[in-house]
Image (tube, rainbow over all chains, first blue to last red; front, top):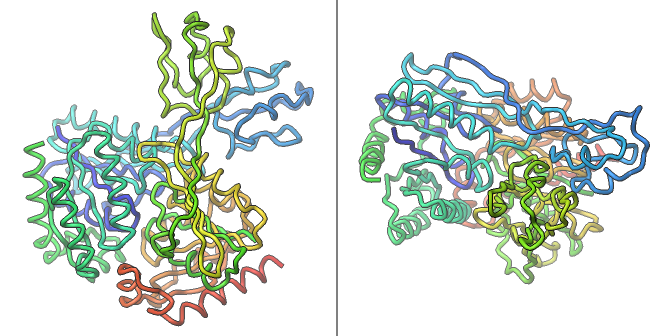
Length: 287
Length: 280
């Protein structure tokens, strides 16, 4: 089993449009959405839900008013300003470290498990399994939820032998992205030819290198800025990153997304993306 | 006044809106804080040299093997599994540590002290006549951005106008960015993705009890779903930036968006006046 991850650094470069299309083109794969706090892949794949599960991670402190003697030690020691002057816990600030529980002289504080969202398994096109999740707004633990989705997807690819996992990654370079990269065989960097697109690409590339993962590049909407597109191509060449392909700005893709359709269901886009998919698969055989 | 510019979905135009707002409204005391510390982009749009760089650290434990008797208490205390006690030493996983300080405080042997672990920098750039840009930049490989966001936001607290260019998503980094703001401007786009992620952002601002308003970017006339959402939540639509290939191209090429779309000036001024009205 091999896993391909699509990431970009910058948001809005077209990760989900392309990932959904390649899932459509793949013969047999398990699909995953690791962008757990803004999960958009299911909007296009419209999977039939097979099962849904609560995701509990970490804890929130609760102070029992009756037993609390208002000594103030918890508020003084809390690094996250999660305890008010009236000794109430702000759940959004509480990181669940449990320091307060351990130092409270009258044991007035209890840590409760925290429901952070849920993850689900679905079925797409009656053959592909899809794993996705929703992190509740304001929650931490996005990295852990990504790990949960990944674990379940890999397990499924094992039990129902599937050669490939195709994953749509989150933007940025933080905990969710780091978690997305675990055990990945090939990263496809989806970029756009803007200063910010290029800048963000380089940062996510550095992260990829730290993790020792091989990658390749897709330049989306390349014709909106041929100069920077050329710069990105040169940069990719100098860094040994093969170009999977360049995609021109396409109104068909814009319209597909507006209608919540996978762009590659359109024959023109399918034809345009097919060579890129072949390049990715070829690259996957050498990593 | 502190205005957070957020979105949920990435690439909807947060940085476009926040940088243009500052240019239109800012004076020499204003400040724009880029808290998208994983991928900060405001500096690429404003293109002014960094004059000052400040390092930001967080605390992580350091175990003194001379005092440590491998009792295992610290591993027991740590709720994040950042410490593992082996038969001959204690292993620390920095990326799992949340810097809560419990292990150092509670170690029976007093064998743990906290040391500073650098996580990123704050870059400061002077902007010609419209204030200061503070950019938080997370070190590549660091998992946790909230401490850096907090540090960036603690600077220039007395500025009369503070604009926060927030990260995408609705996790703890976004919450830390919008926290304590007087108003949250949510930049959205009229697509199913934009709508889905906007709903989550609306939940986030409601949890923090921050008044909010919407800006529809790449507006093409159709907005019935956004209007319905606005009606349902009571969060008003403050303005619309029309879809313009010229603006998209100019912005991508690093040209001035206010020149590529002169009407943007009026649209954003009008949005700001509505925010002022809502807050007065």
